[in-house]
Length: 107
Image (tube, rainbow, N blue to C red; front, side, top):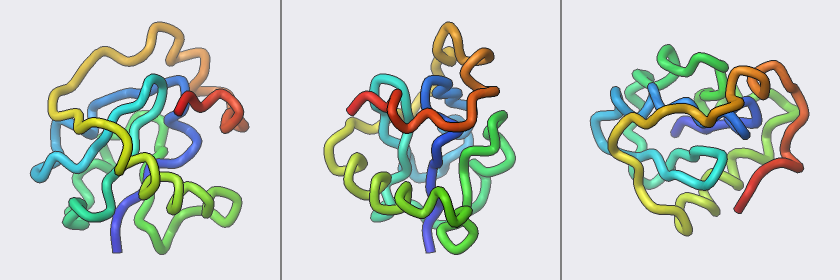
């Protein structure tokens, strides 16, 4: 089992999770983070750090977010690792309240 970043992260990109990851499994896109399932060691540390509750164990990903399992795996192969915490996106607080934002994802 691995952990998965879901829709709540889009246009927010808080990186608190990156700070606690012992294996640097996060990958960074322009407005979203993903977890590389090949690198994740299922430690659970990132889950509690996410202020928008975007990270789930693969078995616990909500039904309407299941496509993010494949999306994390796909984008993890394309995006570069992020190993240090950065500031969230400037309008992250506003976007944290938006529910449906898959259309906003920049690949």
